Length: 156
Length: 242
Image 1 (cartoon, rainbow over the protein chains, first blue to last red):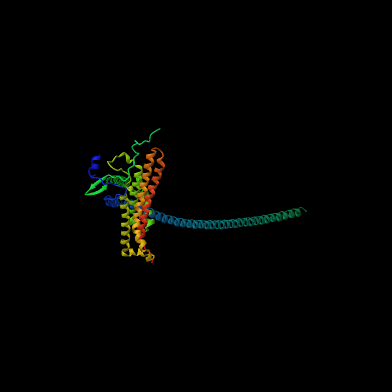
Image 2: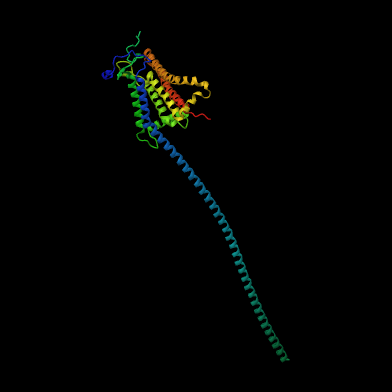
């Protein structure tokens, strides 16, 4: 393994901590290349993904907000309708009660009038009958009186 | 008396030794490239595994990648600003990921098991060439960011708020890459050395706290490098309120 490592290792200079040589520009080129590669493989795609997600989240949020607002509007609308329906029903109940009351009263009045009428008629009938009976009785009594009188007179 | 375990395979110290490759008459440090290819390979494997099937409902590795992406986006947006951060997110993110995986790879991968003819494998960021390369890329990046966004008005930045600032701002252009590269290099190399020295002296248990501290430092250094790079770019593209 060391053979190919030593391949290019020519007469080694003395070295040292601050040994500046062609490593410097080559390393710079390497880092610049790495920057471009990482930009293409990492920064651009990941950035795109993250920003797409962020915009997706914000649009979803906006949509959800809009839908919420719409729902609230609908709810308020329905509440209003419900209240109106309740009021209407209440009014209808009151009207129906009044109507029923009126009908009851008129029916009662009619029935009472009819009852009074038939009672009156019955009374009149009774009166005429009684009168008739009285007349008949009186006539009968007169006739019997007359008969008694004529019989007594005849007997004397 | 038990003699010091000098024979243990991992108790060796090599500083400043490199595996030299000669390419077209130029010397390069082979061990740095070997480990950096491993780092890049690991990064690409992770990225390819996680982005093969991107879905709206993330699953598996995609979650991790989206977390990383969100973290880096927040970092870039905070430092560079809402308007320009999109152009620079890949650069800042690549810096962070490369440095982070390099640092942790240097601390976590048992490189000692692979024997090189000369030098030893380790974090690519423990080599001054790598850190200077990264720092110079940052310098180029912020010059390019400023010039491409503002044209020659970019140089107004050197005399704002007052022309007295001109020499300081010019010096800053040199100190920025210097501090960036040496901070990263120094921290990572020092961490590796501390762990190596502790392991050299006491091979068991004792280096563990230093190793954990090293993991922490490594993560922090990656964050610092990426944040500063983003801050410099943000400074360059920042529009003064006139």
